[in-house]
Image (cartoon, rainbow, N blue to C red; front, side):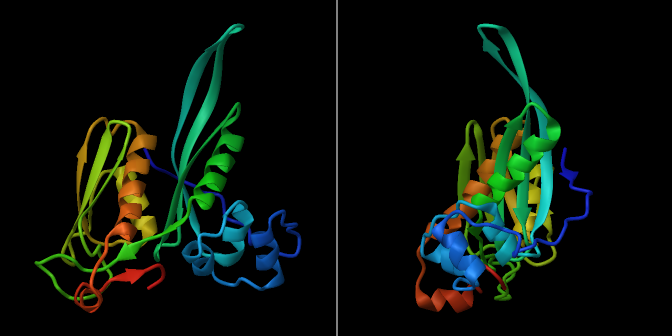
Length: 225
């Protein structure tokens, strides 16, 4: 079950933020003004406030909140586990998980973790049925896995929509993909594994090589369109 965060997101106050890392200090000073620079150069993204400052249009969704237990010498200990996804519906997405004794802190931890795992999504039009050259789908097929769950993404023509389960649909929608085919294998009832497998397949798109002439043919775009 996908739960949309209903609370209105407050505007991030950069002046009240006290960064603790070098990247955070450069963002507050104005030296770094684009999230692309951080991701492309492999700079450490250790503060969720960096993402809040550079991507103010980021949306948040809570995918699942469940009660988990573990055995301790003093007995059973129960905690809440939350799975969340963040994205701007335009080439950036992240998935995270958080645990706490209460629901609220678990959700906040999951959202913060999702922001720290942010990636750029490679979009395009790789379907032989379409060939429009716009960034509405993905340029080529990709696979990802987590636990027993395996997800395969396939390019789809314009107008098909997101042919996927609710969890994968939330991740793909926040990534900015409008049309796609998906295949799933394994126990997709495990929300976290399903979300991470979808996220992993999107991340694997960035490791596929292509020739320069294919960029225009497939309409390949990385990050914002």
